Length: 207
Ligand code: HEM
Image (cartoon, rainbow, N blue to C red; front, side, top):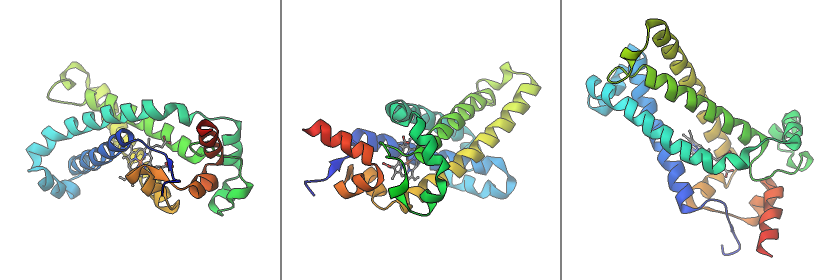
């Protein structure tokens, strides 16, 4: 509808979905290398050798595009006192009693927290991933460092995968969010209900 509000530009949406596709590819190829029981997934990438070649490049591409996305959205994810109150009132959040919660800006405290978990796990993944990248870098490090890096790489991947499952669940739970990321726009009612502070700021800007 013409009365809708823009939430994401085409460039932000392409950036987000490129990260999402690379997350799936880097994730599946990484799982194939993680455990023999999951090695069958390597067939999707042309076999074991190709999976091993491609995985670090897919991961690096995901990190770089995520970095671009994170730089764009970091400013909207700064925590403040209202966010602390929002988190303390988590019972109202899960009970869908949004009217009792402090006014939410562009993102709620749950989204902000998740954003910083994504940033942290991506940083751990890229640093540990480069260290254990046998083709180019791993010969520069000692065995202790390589062991710690492998452990941290798997732990960060675990946190990232769990976080994205929560992210997708929340995106489906809050009806209209997926539409925002697909088409860029949200209704005024959606903005008022879920992000009143952001809605007021957008309306003020338009005047
Ligand atoms: C694969 C399926 C995915 C779906 C269905 C999905 C869905 C969404 C939706 C609907 C939003 C908009 C939320 C809003 O405007 O309130 C969003 C935002 C966002 N998504 Fe995703 N997403 C996916 C994967 C990913 C991945 C893999 C990442 C990064 C690793 C990611 C990072 C983000 C970020 C940073 C935002 C902006 C929120 C913020 O800055 O706090 N998404 N996503």
